[in-house]
Length: 215
Ligand SMILES: [Zn+2]
Image (tube, rainbow, N blue to C red; front, side, top):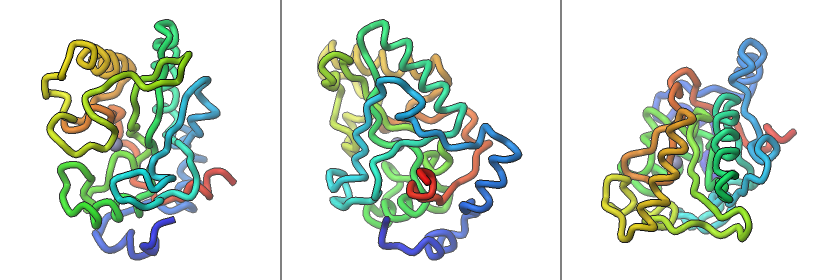
């Protein structure tokens, strides 16, 4: 995974982070907290997990596996959004979903600013299994619909409040935001691709590797 040791990542910024053992006992009590494999759960969902490649802003491969997980209610809501889009010949592509806390620490240490990366003192909603980075695709061709910027573009054009360059881009962005809103997600104010699941506060910050989840 990342260079940072898990122990250091968890204690360096004084945040309470849930381990694998704690996660397992929590899921037994509350099955909603289970991290669900999105590819298995949602028919025709497309993954392009950038952090499993060097094609991301860190220039490094962060994840060993190209997987996407989210807590059960998040996965169910995303499934509904996908179903609705299907009737328009569209679908969702996931760039990132649940993210282990140690990766958030790494991003902060690379970028050094919390405008576009989460503060390690609070953790990211991705760390809670309650955020997804997504875009729209044409289901037939698999091609991404035109959006204001590429994924993880740290510029003002990525802000949902920035006027779109043309009508088609504006329409695509609005459709994504409106569909996600309908199923309980809110778009991030500086990233058109990032959606938080409302209710994320009820889910702990986790530092579990994908390898543990696919076992
Ligand atoms: Zn995000």
